[in-house]
Length: 448
Image (cartoon, rainbow, N blue to C red; front, side):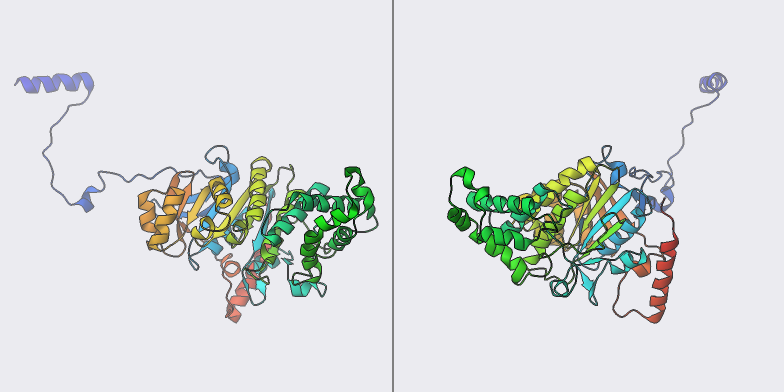
């Protein structure tokens, strides 16, 4: 009786009555409605859509420029995974979607290809852009040349580039006396060649026959300077008259537009294990540093396929490390695409590679074998659950770690993008027609 009175009083006062219910036995499938599913917060809705989160089904949007300074300490990005799991497709769609914004510019170092062209050739053509195809054989017959002494590069940049080329070719740092001989030769050529672009032959000729006025203030003989610069002259001669001739031994080819929204350096004709690859990377890196990077509020993406060929050279890795530091101030996102982390951290430039990896606040990992996944997890500090699922990932699905925000994401490719993203030698006539329609559709789309 007292209990009923108490309940009546509580109901009148508070408008409710606490009740006691008997326990219910049920299955986990039916009880799931009691505990509603929750998902970790995403990265926001500003940027380009990548796909959807596998576990929550939410759309996954990523943009390093929007996240930088808030959720990202640096805008750089590392993409890892075995071949055939979707790395290339991700990068291509990402670039196509970023280029919809007017304040975006992308440079791609395209080291892979088929049928005689790089794999980015389709996208470049669809955007009405001509790839910069670097080929030592074609360069001798009027192909593309890049001049390390191009006036578009500052004099400081030219000297830095010459030193890097020589150090890469020699496999060691330049000695002080040899460095002085190079500096004196460069200063003389810069001061005397005015009616045309200076070229490497001018530096070689000056190293072989130094000008007395360039060294007399030091109280040394020209013969001494000549001996100091002999090895330097021999290395540069290889670029002019040796197995690397053709690409760097003349004025820069006309028609190279560094203001285009997309710049593709097609390296597919160059032997990946050749010394030409790191030398070329050095030239492109310095060239971009001194002509492309400027405080004009344009957000730039520098995407490097087969990136271990760069990072495995200590001298080139140091150059790119400097380029990445510029990125924080000038709006540059560096994207490195590699197959295995061991290709980088166990290479000749392990120290430089580690520094570059630390700058990458975004890491995307596609399927890897269990042992490689464990090694990757240790180096990148991934949570255990992410390491365990990496070997089980299907093509197109990857673990994304954005400064500690870890998600499993399925990449989505639109029908318009598909024929431009997937390149196949055995493409049928229907596929060719589909690709042409996609190119026309892409060309007609306005930039935001």
